Length: 337
Image (cartoon, rainbow, N blue to C red):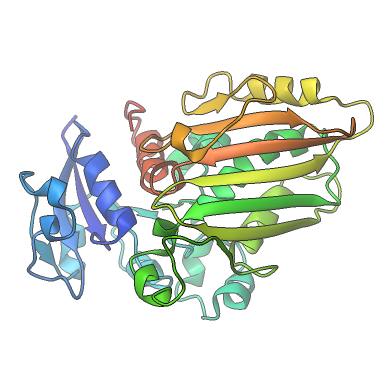
């Protein structure tokens, strides 16, 4: 099989850089174009010195004609931009998007949560929300692949198998998530310039964070009853990583042991999902610079309640690594990240 030619749009952001680092190691990929706007003409090593001695193209402005020469377009752009590119795709192009552009299945929901009209409504039905361990081979049937958000990835991986098995109550799920500041993009340093970003912990988007819509949409797919959850994200004084703490009420007759067994069985063949021993302590340091998701089921002082800890690297499993996983599935490539 020949190498797949790749274009990365939005190559200089934290996710774009991480994607480049993964793809230069992939034996079946050739990075043909790196695209940007304000960075046109620069070397990618300007944004990450570790790429200085890698043979990579200079950053150029995206042009429609490039689509004639590539197989895959990765987009790590501001919301709305991948929709525009999707309208230009050739039959042999596969778009793998790391923004929110195709995560929501209703254009009205996109407008409600992202405050902009969808620019490619016709392509919503042609896209798939692709959480690799859950979506699996269905990904092979689509040319527009939407990668989940970083917070939802850490939350959906432990919850979907449990909701699918009707093992937990769905009326009062409490989700507390903490992320490294890289999740907010390069602009975070300016935005939090006077807020002591590197030494303080801060809640944001309380009650109405955009990822609420994505989490609700995906949980509803598997729920047998109404979903009711509270999600609060926090920005932590660390560069990367997410730790989600999920508080759950168990269905009658379900124990923490049973919950642990459900997760073990569901993910037994999934190399990137690690179900730890019950009551294992867990932190972001366990998953940094990996494509792994570590999950720990913990007892509480109440028999009918448990706490689940879920940790990922937001730039890899919550971003670039998941995108590469989706590419591997779509093109029947060896699952290496």
